[in-house]
Image (cartoon, rainbow over all chains, first blue to last red; front, side):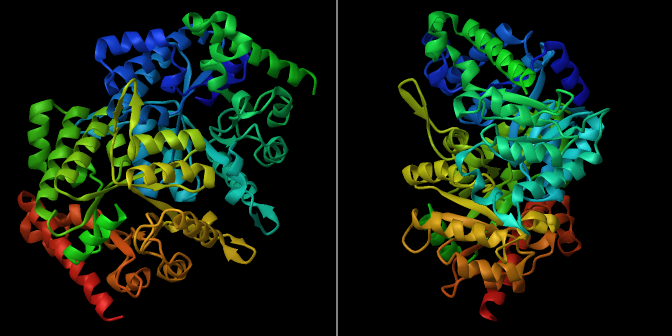
Length: 308
Length: 308
């Protein structure tokens, strides 16, 4: 799957992943109205609105991008109905040949991580049959529990040719509270990065590992160091756009081969129509605004990489 | 909710939480057979088997215990159908007046943690209506992202009078890989414990905070230190039984008032019928075996606390 991700990045020329993180207040009124008309102001109605919103955005941008990253929290907030919309979104994106990164940030003790890995990336045995539960292509994983929380995911990835992005240095303002604490003179995130590199060696694709890392665009200096510590890891970079990251901050997340990083934008793409810059599209044409925002983001990153 | 948990612990005399972490291979054949007969060897069939298994165990033990802890990974492995069984289990346990600890180990950047908090503990706005998605009483939270990953959970807990257990020192063998690394001469888990104590001060019940901690029974020495660092935090202690923890290891997790800790057992209770000790019950009477295992566990802990 890392090979598929890389070849799609090369084909589109856009190392971009669109974060499908729908909040109800991003969704234009006409979509909400239609969904509520059909299902009432219920969890089912909300899930239908989310799904129609996602579908329209995916239809508008799928040819420009290699991957999407649905954030499962935004679906879990609507309970079981929301989780159904998550699954529907995953399936639809795969039908459009997009690589699907399930932003689930799971991680637990061994046997429990194994269950998560099976549910999100693998297949579960039921009697004589096997089934894929959610069936994303990649999942994000929290490393706080150490190797035996991560290795069950690696095992399923080996079987299914799927991949992981391990949280190393997250994009949020307080990420330094624990991640930056110095251990033998070096921040915790560097030690996690070194461990990601070691895990990654056990899971190599052709040129990159299918064990990648999450490093926030909001921390470009740290990204530069981590790029060197994990030369074979693909870096998933959140925090572009709404969280403050810009194209020029991103160059050090990439390797000299122009590969090695994929940049996420969520709100900046899916709610682009709410920005002044894309205001001319209006809520009716929100999906076209998303397409324009993807094109602008791709150009911004391309230019930053050319100028480095 | 922390008050309810404490008063139920006092009433039952059992600081015990039963981990409802069903694996299909724990579930007696007659239950699987019936579920597969009705729904086929499908995800729906598996979810039905899980639900019937849980229900029988809850019916057999609910009067002996204050709380249950369904591990959502074990449900997510069966995809959407599994998540439905999770919700059914949560609702059923609440109808039996059990405190439900959702073992979800969520944690993300601020706005995303807020969505998880709303989905698992709070209420989501849909048009003019509000709905509870999963509606557990407590949730477990991963602290790797720092305060802005945890505070949105605290906020929802304040509104809903619910609670949290933050991962501090986990029960698994490799938990030390990052958690034990020394920062200014002290292990990371102590710094996380100090932060839990600070977060907890903002969320006090009568005598204990509704921000608690997870510390594994497998690390009794660390538990002793953490008990002092977080005097007002309830400690959720996994790792009893199948993972190797024993009653005598647990005493230091409790305060002098005999409160302050609640010990989880999952496999040791729900699959008790598979142990030689409870073999006489047989698979047909698995729920009675679970009841006997709860009684033995409560006695083991009671005795350990009396002997300290």
